[in-house]
Length: 324
Image (cartoon, rainbow, N blue to C red; front, side, top):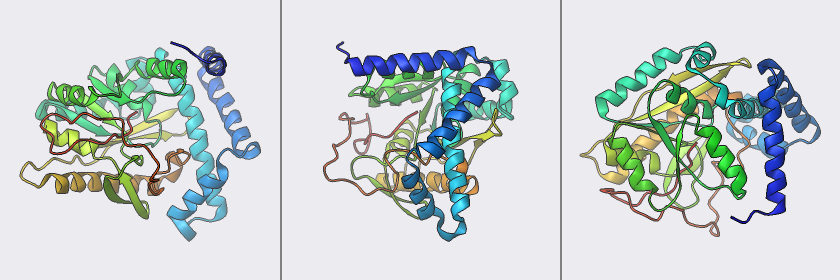
């Protein structure tokens, strides 16, 4: 593997920062992350104008300019805290998670019930709170959970991210065989986690979302339909600085008698309606800084998806969809 000097330097910087956040006491690490987020927000104004534009589009005059800035700040601060928790992921135990997640045991019991009843489960995990913590929490509860991840441009950074996420999620590299692996593992009683609130790069499902229309992938609903398992939207909310709460919303079940495209549209629309309600209730919990804004129109020059293989027994090929 040939790695450029730039990528090596980026990786070295990442390792240095990760080392610092691991050796610092928990609260001190968060204080450093908070300070870094303040500098990024107030001095460097990291993506601030675009983020405020997005918040203004969604909320209009219901939020004052000051309230919009507050939402943007909380979102960036939350991202900084998420990075600290990801860098410290190797230290987490069931006992630590039980202390820091308010309803840890009940929510894990709910997941076990759904898997036992239906033979598998798709989790729609939006960019709310610390979404990466879900995989870690489920894994430490003894429940098998996996996801699909694309490859970052910096292979060293990509491998590091997968190692950190691997403390919870089992990562399948995105590629031609990923679809069949997902369906097989769902049918074997595992949980598949997927990020539903990201615009896909080619035309697919047009879903009302946040006052606009989002072009979303059918993957979440398609996998559930093929494997005949429900889709459960799960929200991971940050409570203060250090605590979390999981919210399992209403599961959606595929209808085998319905026309396939209409069923996928129904499932995805219902899931996104629940997610939108959570975003509107606590907008500072959502990640507003995503480079690929969920409501951006499609670009004709964008490449088609990376999944080329058709899912077994699927009604249509499954476009790519972001995963944790």
